[in-house]
Image: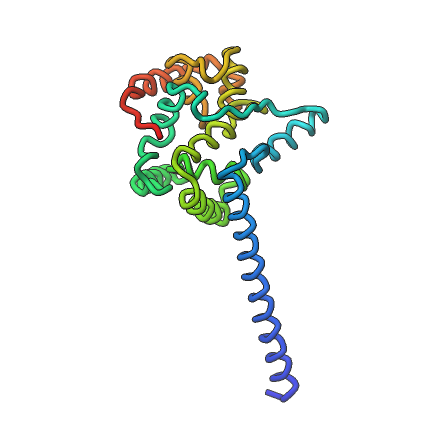
Length: 239
């Protein structure tokens, strides 16, 4: 190998190291930026989430003046029936785990392997919130990794009640409908504090496919899910 070749290789390796260091630095800065928002939102209610921005952009492609339906409601003013229904439907160990339901994740992986595709995620309420606040709905390894990091952040900084309060106010519940108050008014014409157990169970059953159930409110599968959620609600533990 000539001296010129060795010099070229050394030059390339030197800039490769600098590039990798710069990339790591940018990733760390991004994590600090996310953590800053997590700390702020422990005290300030988030107005818009990444998921809301994505849905609003989709709506405005068809109707440029489209707006989201959303209205913040403090935790004590939201029906306890809805809180119990969501715990039962989405994460019955929410008050006990540290952000991850490892048994649920294992069951989801086994189910996905049997089906040969991703049909279950095993996500907790904390993980769902992390995704909605900052990330896209795309199911990529990078997004799942970032979701896990954000989940650790909010579980470290926020109380379980704060996590649940923000979740109740930002999750999607229909086409352009976000949060419990907007959902209660959209589907029943009442506030989220007035929901009956049956109404709460039905809303909780919509969460995995909210836009589908917004269009198909009489879907037989939703009725079956709602009945099952309703039967389990008395045993739910809420923060």
